[in-house]
Image (tube, rainbow, N blue to C red):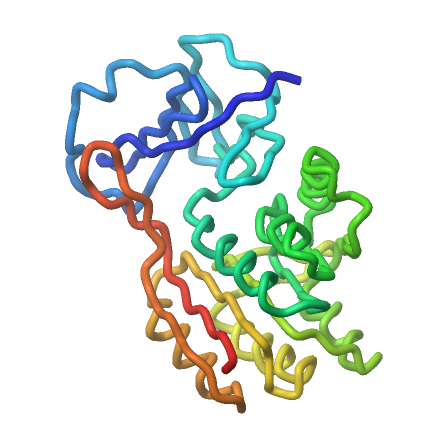
Length: 280
């Protein structure tokens, strides 16, 4: 499989973003980029463009032949990368700050057991495993869990202590509580809407608070750390902080911030909200 390195976001605007993954320049949808591009000339030379349809998916238009899949080396992690029918490519570069946070925690504290929810292709799971942590990786999509397992193999981490779970998040956490299981850290990036492995419905406005309450039962409300990120309208970094602060019963620091990427054109690309809690 072809291996390439490097990622950067070049520009954004007109509900799109212009990215460079290795040698390939992509245009993908970005609904919140409701502003003009900073450098229109950059947008003339692209290799693949994702075009959405009215059915929730879309298709790619190609100027350059791009492999069906390839390995991307980025931020100390190798990712199996694909241009999917939903416009995803297999990693979220705005999470790189959180991967670094995990690595720093791992340098200072050993034998932590971490629960990574809505874990997608496993960037945070891999950073945890690199840091010597034990991980439970959960996603409702079997395809995404299989993708994350492939990423673990690419990084020679498939022999590390990790549980791969395909399950509805609330059902799984309920069983863990009954088993009196304990975790020391939590990473979660909940969607606005989703479905569990058996069709269970997730709505962030109805279920996020209840999920956080359940997670506190898994750590006696005293986690070593929590990384909570969100891309849903109305869930600002301060809102996320308040949701954690009201539940955590141990002293620590809260870092609330926007997720963003620095564009090579000079702007900042907004990519969600984040609250990071670290106990003292």
